[in-house]
Image (cartoon, rainbow, N blue to C red; front, side, top):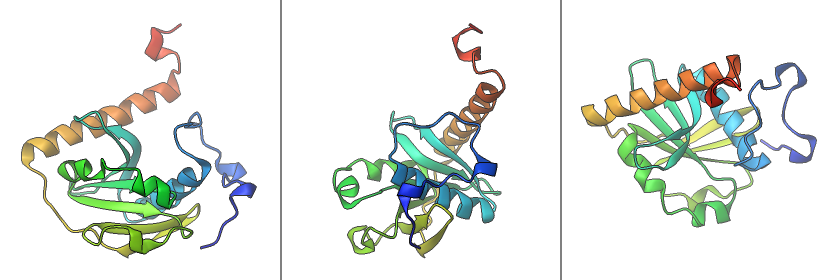
Length: 168
């Protein structure tokens, strides 16, 4: 999966209606796009940047047809992975946890006890499946509410971009 980020990755006929997310690098966004495509093809509904009860923000949260929750933490470089000590917090908010990275990052740096996905802008490959760690019922309910509210708010923002500030 080689790709040249200097060429960009947005296909003109599928340009996003969402405003650009300036929190991630182009490389991280390319990985995110490929992961989202793969998870969507597997029947999961995916939403990026969901804030958890702890205040941490998960890169991707996916909801399966039976209500199982997957969190994917995107790491676009070795430095990105090494500077992040918060990822274990995500284990408490998901049934499945994955790291996702690009083909340019050595896969051996990621812990063996979590899932691993390698992605480019066009798709993704699951190198190591995640272990299932079933959420407590109260945590599942809280996460389902967060996912629903994040999705509903974003849909409304697309329909009425000025609604968040009182319509001005």
